[in-house]
Image (cartoon, one colour):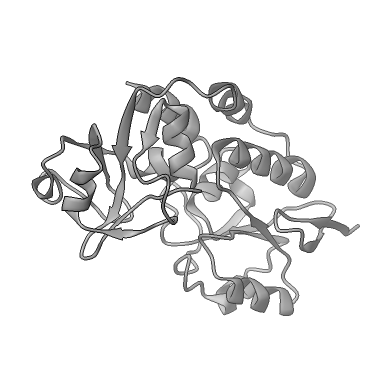
Length: 248
């Protein structure tokens, strides 16, 4: 029996009473869903790299999904994200009769709440143990600020994580102030501008741009540290690992 629910954006979604086939267009959500019912995942993007042994049809990328391939997979539900995926693709899938659940995530507590709604209300799957762990680890009072950080996500042009983003909130919950918290979400900057903000460290992730020891640190006078992009930007099982690893 179909149920009409509302996703994170308030859009009505007709969800099957029993959800057996899911296509995920978001790497974080793919990892989250696979942690509970990997057999229910029938499609994912080429960027869905976790779990490493995920063996499902690939439906191209987050920004250019193969809509015909998704329709052919006959999913009970497609899961998407407001920032990761295009509204046009979501609309075209819905017009083709495919139910799409869109998440909207800008903070760590928001991610936990969004996934709880997805698992409990939309999918009617038992929420995983890592989700309650993530709530305990991340959703308490903010700690004192102990330093300032900058997170570049691209170069040529250089772009950094700004305010009102999941990563900025995650940093703050680790005790770090995002030196660009007062800007737009992903401003374009110059390395000299980053140094001028006097951060204690520049964190160089390996996605979406793959910074390495030979590509990135040389641009800054500020100390740099190479970090996992998954731990800085993904919401899902990685949140438990991120709390332990990034705090170190």
